[in-house]
Length: 270
Image 1 (cartoon, rainbow, N blue to C red):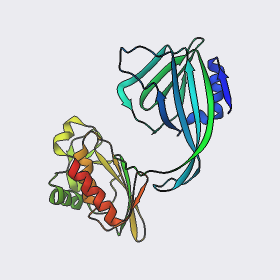
Image 2 (image 1 turned 45 degrees about the horizontal axis):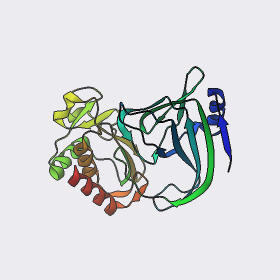
Image 3 (image 1 turned 60 degrees about the vertical axis):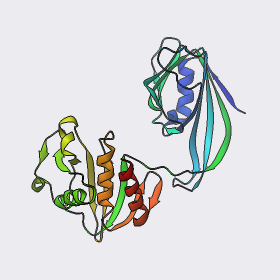
Image 4 (image 1 turned 120 degrees about the horizontal axis):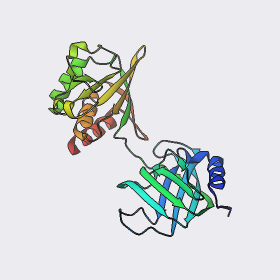
C-alpha cells in the first residue's frame, strides 16, 4: 500500500497536482464528521476521496473508483460553513490550497465550504473499488428531447395553470414580470419562469434553453430558485405533457412514461 508523507504546503501542493487537485472527485467519508461551531477541534482528521477511472456514468452501469485516504495530523482548524452543509459521496469541485505560514491549509466543497488546517498530512492509496452506479435525480437540471417545435410561452403558462394550478410569469433576470407577448415564441434564452408572488424576492426562476432540430427540439431546464420546490415541480409537470422522446435527470435516462412519473412524484411532494 503506497503512502506519501507531506510536511509543508509545497509538498502538499505537489501531491494535489499529481491528482489534478481532485477536480470532480467524490468526497466519500470524514472521520470525524465536521462538528457544530464551538466543538473541540480534533487532533487528526481523515478524508477519503475517490475518482472514477473507468466504466459508465448512468444508473446501473459498473464503474471503477480509485480511492485515496488523506490523514491530516496536528489539526488546528476544521470548520464547515454553513454548519451542517455536508453530504456523503458529494462530487466535489476540487481541493483549493490556501495560503498559510508553515502549515497546510486547504478548502473543499462538501457542498458547503470545509476549511482544514494541519501541521502534516499522509496520503494512503487504497485498492480500486468496483461498484454499480446507484440512481440519483437532479433538482437543478433536466435535459429533454421533444418531438416537433418548442411550445409558445403562452402555451407553457396556460398548461402549467391548467395541470398544476400554479400561475407562472416570464421575466428577465432581476426584473419584474413581463407580458408573455414580449417573450420570443420559440427561443427563451435569457428569460425565466417564476411564480408571481416570488418575483419581488428573487432574481431568477427556471430557465428553458432551446436547441431546435429538423424534427425535434432539445430543452434544457435549469432551476435557479432551488428554495422553491413547487416552481420546479410545476415546470417539470408541464413539460412532461409534451411529446417527450427522451429525458435525462441526474444519472437517469428516462422514456416519456418514466419522466411523467418522476414529474408527478415531484409535484406530489412539493
